[in-house]
Length: 189
Image 1 (cartoon, rainbow, N blue to C red):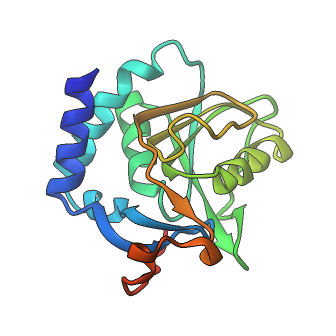
Image 2: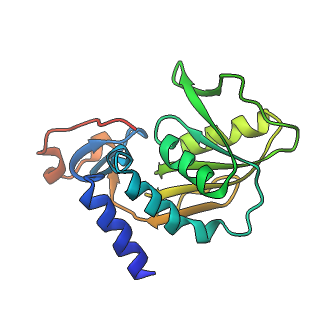
Image 3: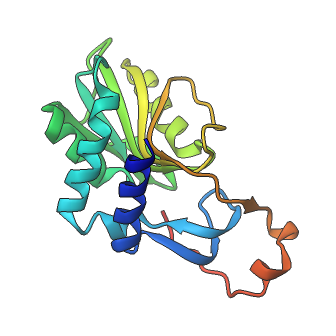
């Protein structure tokens, strides 16, 4: 397991996806670390390898469709679908809420795997799960590259991650002095 974590961190570091500084996360929390998975997703060999490393954890899951929320989950979701030969669809933002568009629908009872890049509190992942259930599908699990909560976040389905990391996060009014001294960036998700 240590070798897996080491390889994954090496990929994130080499591609510039694991960044250090002062960041505002989508959750509104501040952190000294940020996973900008868009950086790793430029390197399709890295995406392929990360997905290969994730595949053993997906064995035994029964699903027909992979659903990824925009933007973060798009590339990794498509690669999971490609490697598992499943249907791939995505949810996109309209007025800052996720929705299915482009004629995407679920058959009644269709089993759906949600794929994300990074989960911190799980808000966007839960929003995606709600789309599945409201559309008549059955969510099976949420798969992600990075669980920033190190297993502390819970959703209505199992969470499967390639890497569990817990970098400290802070409310805006409770920043440690060393973080407050660094200019803040909001890199987006």
